[in-house]
Image 1 (tube, rainbow, N blue to C red):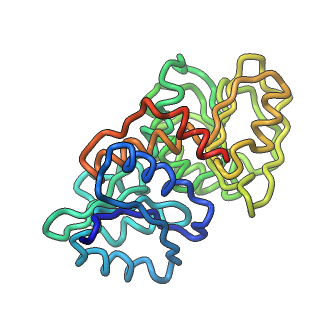
Image 2: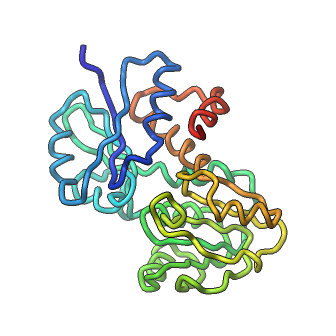
Length: 270
């Protein structure tokens, strides 16, 4: 009997831990379904979606670098994801073959910091890609203070501030870190196979939080430096599991069993 399935797509994709997360939940619930990993290069993105549109067993896919923005050109957008965030990290298939864009990154980013009081707080975001868009969207709903985006393309970063109605500025990489209550690395810097993120955390006051969306490796040099300073940290697995939980319910119609998070995290860090 053929199984319903979902998958994660990206380029590269071998590092993705999404199959481990979703299969862990599928097995825990005893669902007859699977979750795969699929390497898709940019030139084949349209072909990939065209093929999946005609496959009734395909529930949808999560999307990672570099396709979060480009995916919107190949699917429908009834939730206005393009206007609200500008990037999709989830595409689902309706029974009639319609492919629907969604974004669970914003919710996944917010969950680990939901208890913090960030109203009026200064924030630093590193990066201006698809993940950064979701972060900035979430921050725009939290009424934060000035946001500094550190990115090699200052025009793109500045445009994102305007898009999300945030006060702040865009500065190039290498700029001294301003004082901030929260620093978020939403870039691929520090990921296995990518350049290191070189930044001096000395200007941060005690009590600041450093949040790295990179999860491969889990212990990045940024988080290690933050812990050496005695700062609170949030690692990339927190957001990864959070956004995956939202996506899982959409893809498979059941909420994942979060009482197994400790065992899941142990699996992901092996």
